[in-house]
Length: 157
Image 1 (cartoon, one colour):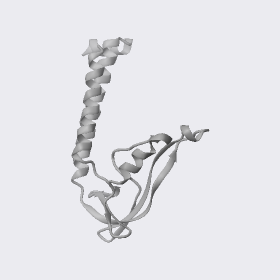
Image 2: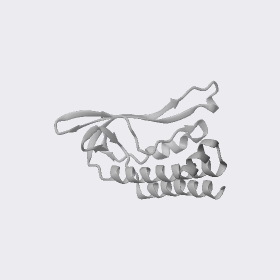
Image 3: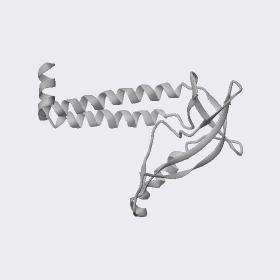
Image 4: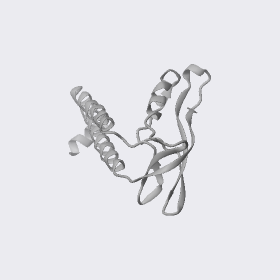
């Protein structure tokens, strides 16, 4: 272990790539664990106040501008009203040309009636909520990306 840390501090290529691969694996495991936790959160009918796209960051030209989903909703849990602004634990920042990805993601909002949507909230802290929980397909994509990245990094050693 000391050899690995010494190599990492010295900038040894193998040590740095091993650390990067380990980081990808750890983040992948954490992401998958979190996605499964969120899937178990209770849901409630919320009122959708805003749903659209918002600029993210700054750009001098329209073609270089990035975008993110912009949602606002409110819901009641145990007689207390909460406001939410998170669409999904899977955060997407898209370029001007890839805004269709955000619109596609927003189609995952479950609509209930005219203004109602399903919101999933953390039971111990309803302030934390999402309109979309990760599907098994999303979790599989996260796993493939994170573990695939780790494998590619590690294969470069």
